[in-house]
Image (cartoon, rainbow, N blue to C red; front, side, top):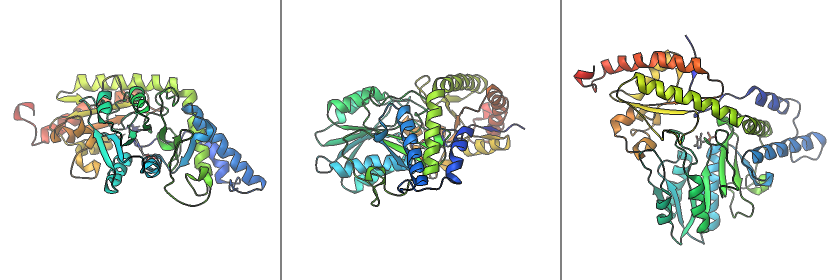
Length: 389
Ligand SMILES: *Cc1c(COP(=O)(O)O)cnc(C)c1O
């Protein structure tokens, strides 16, 4: 049996060159970057090299990169940090219905603290209409936060147009680009982005490290109090091995991006075409072309995502689903609901996300086992109409 990992949107394997770059900082290079002696200065220099590497990936300046514990903290810092800093100026925030929980739940917490939040809807492909953003802006709006590319359905949002509208109205624009970074080219200058979240473990770096890009001159408050690390925006002794690993991962992503993206797009389209042509009663979720290179998300009618995941696991395939059990609540994924799927169809969803180490043989293997698994589950399912069983 083959083992095929197809859950790169959940996490990725550390790139061998990333691991190699980190090891010295877990062994003898032990200095605290705030210390004055040589191993401290060496650690400080390594952190600054990583800062420049991360900045280069998104065309930012090194001093605009704040290291955090991951994408979740970067999202929290962006939303809460700006809301706290600008609460005297206005108390209205605009985001979307398809954000990651790190943004969605932070926005909900800000609502409990007296802010007003507008959640923009999306069309059936998961796209946000820029006209709706224009209409939602009020003199009270201080911030817009829109996911760059969705982690479940892969749809890439019209970030250039959305950020331009925010800029025209003098409103800060944040994007959760955790899934987009390293997969599609991003230039924060060209796109007028003020704040951007990214995460190490989604780009073949280590877990527990990420960064927030904060445009120069931005008024933002820290979430925590402590030392003066990260321009006082993120106090605490730096996670030096993690930061070094993230820097290396960012450098590799910048160099390899065109090749990675072409490889993934080809595999993705082969997978999508293969599934749609070999299985009946299936739909592709997310936009057909404006989607992340490695993302495929399907809904299979009459079956449950969890049973599908278990059967795939027995066949050596790691995947994920937006069905209720896997979303950790009674309701299926808020993203699948937002694109208008019924509960039944959302429950039968399957997300397959490809990565740099996948090849055509992996996809062929999936295409060789999936139709039988779906057929078997449908034959057992009480949801299947008699004529389809
Ligand atoms: C994974 C992910 C996050 C959270 O990042 P962590 O580093 O795991 O905290 C946030 N947003 C999106 C879109 C993600 O895919």
